[in-house]
Structure formats: structure tokens, C-alpha cells
Length: 374
Ligand SMILES: Nc1ncnc2c1ncn2[C@@H]1O[C@H](COP(=O)(O)OP(=O)(O)OP(=O)(O)O)[C@@H](O)[C@H]1O
Ligand SMILES: [Mg+2]
Image (cartoon, rainbow, N blue to C red; front, side, top):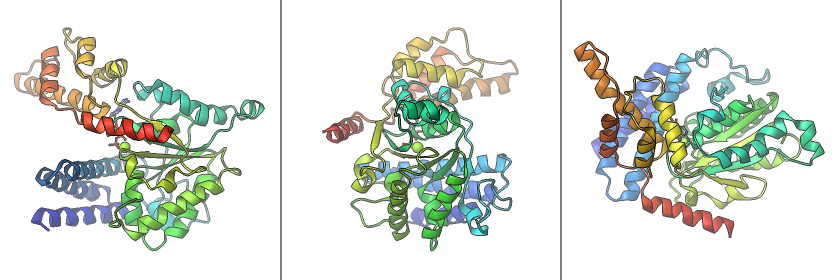
């Protein structure tokens, strides 16, 4: 294909290699370059679907790059030091790929989605926190929950926050991990993953972007991915009785219609939870969250801004707040005196930022949700 496709592939491969080796700095730089190339490719793409899927790929690479930065900054200096989760029986190989996080996020860090949080509390939080009460009332926790909804609505954030709420170890399985780390040893690795998760008092196994692990229609996916995920899904069923009190499964996708029906089979991700765009109170909360620690002028009216942000995703709103900070920051640097973020600045940024989720896409989610409850 084109030169930029080659560039993308090269950087992506180097990034994944460096990441596997725990060279977080180089991994981050290569992955950022790969994301940049993919973003360029998305601009050149013919047709909205291809463009969007490329944008999403670029987004995923950016997330991976961010994870590398986080890994470097955390006291987990890469694979050389054994992660606490790797049980004694785990050889060196497991250390290469088993990343156990302890997310710091809590439900309070997720704006809105009150019903969803309550649902997760019932299914995942309370039965863990009060096991005796739960069994008295016949409330069974655990199992699998699939979060689906438009991009940037907080699905990944919510999964992390769930782990934070119940102080669970968080094992995240992403397409890039499976591709880069599981080749050739998929079966053993799945066993190690489950062993490590079971060795913790509480664990969440989170399969992010689950649709890209299981291509339902296309056969272009890697055979590794196609082998691994069905096995994980089978493993989930095995956990139904014995360990359902200590291991929870969460999945997330923004293209649920691409899922293989096997994912949704009973005993797997049978609970499906729609994560919609934020409503007005949630948008206001996000403005508060993302402007809280910044110099904000007295004329900023959060209510009016929250109303104007109808149709924007959480990720959009965070981006808008980040961008609104740039102008007064630069002015402060240039002028010496500290400037503030004004209402007009934020309005300008909003006017300049298109909604990342189209009405068409929203309709597609409604349709899929409707078909699911039938
Ligand atoms: N409900 C929310 N509350 C607070 N912040 C949010 C919320 N939704 C999104 N954000 C912000 O947007 C960022 C991206 O959200 P997140 O990665 O969780 O979206 P996602 O639903 O997983 O998207 P994708 O489908 O593209 O993976 C978050 O890290 C957070 O900064
Ligand atoms: Mg996500």
C-alpha cells in the first residue's frame, strides 16, 4: 500500500516490540508515531466507515502510548521486576505480558451514568463488600458485563473505576497485547491469566475493544486473536460456580454489532449495559471536573456551557477543556501576568470542535439495543 501505511506498520511493530521489552520511553514514541500515521491514513480514507475505523485505531494507539507513560511513571519498572500478581508457578514468560493494575479511579471520577453505576454496584460491588448479606438474600454477584456505547463515553474509565471501587486487581486484555504477547503460547497464557486472577482476593478481567479480538464477519483477523478470545470466553463459563465471587469479567466495545454472537451467549457477557452520551447534569459535572484545577474566570457559566455541549461525548468535553486552557496559558507565558479561562474562550473552542459522535451512529446504537431486548 502507500508509503504512510508502511510507516505506520513499521512504527507500530517497533512500538509493540519495545513495549513488550518494557522499554516504555521508546514504546511510547513509536506508538505515538504510529498513531500519527494512522490519523493521516484516516484523513485519506474513502468513505466514513473506513475513516472511522482508522480513527479508532489511531485512538487505540494513543491509549497504548499513554499506558506506556503510565507504566514508566508507576513504580512498576517493567518486566524485569516481577509483578506481585505473578504467582510462584509463573515462569518468566508470564511476567512479559501479565499486567496487573490497581486502578486509582472510583465511581466519583465517572460523571453521570448513575443507573449504570447502581447496576454495577448490585452485580459487582455489594456482593463483594457484603458476601454474607448477599448470600442471605440470594443475590449472586460476579459474571460478565459488557459495556457498549459510542466512543469516548467512559466505558474503559468505568471498568477501571469498578476495579477501584472494590479494590480489585485489574487485568486488561487488549488487542495489541494479544497480538504482541500471546503468539504461540495462547493456551498457557490464558491459564496463567486465570491463575493469577484467582490468586488475588478480587480480580477483574477486562477485555477492552472486544470486537477487534473477535472479527465476526471478516476473516482478516489474526488467527491468534481468533483462538484466544473464544478460549477466554470458555474459561469464563468454567468460573461460573467456583470463583464467581472473586473474579468478574468486563468487556467493552463501541461497535457491538461487529461482535461474534458467541460473546453474548449465556454464562458469558450476558449482561449488556448501554453507556450513552452524557446528559446535561453529567456534562456539567465533567466541566467541573476538568476545569477544577485551572484558573477559571468569574464569568464562566457552567450551566450554559453544559447546555451547549449537548451531543458531545465525555472525551470531547475533556478535550475542549484541555484546549480552552491553552490560549490563556500561552498569553500568561508571553505577558507575565496570569490570564484565566473565560466563558468566551470555552465557547470558541466548542464552536470549533465538532461532535465526535454522529446522529447516525447514535441511531445505530438505539437499533442494536432494540434488537437485543427483543
Ligand atoms: N462519564 C465520564 N466522566 C468523566 N470523564 C469521562 C466520562 N466519559 C469520558 N470521559 C473522559 O474521556 C476519556 C475517554 O473515555 P474512555 O476511554 O473511558 O471512553 P470509552 O467509552 O472507553 O471510549 P472508546 O469506545 O473509544 O474506547 C476518559 O479518560 C475521561 O477523561
Ligand atoms: Mg475504551
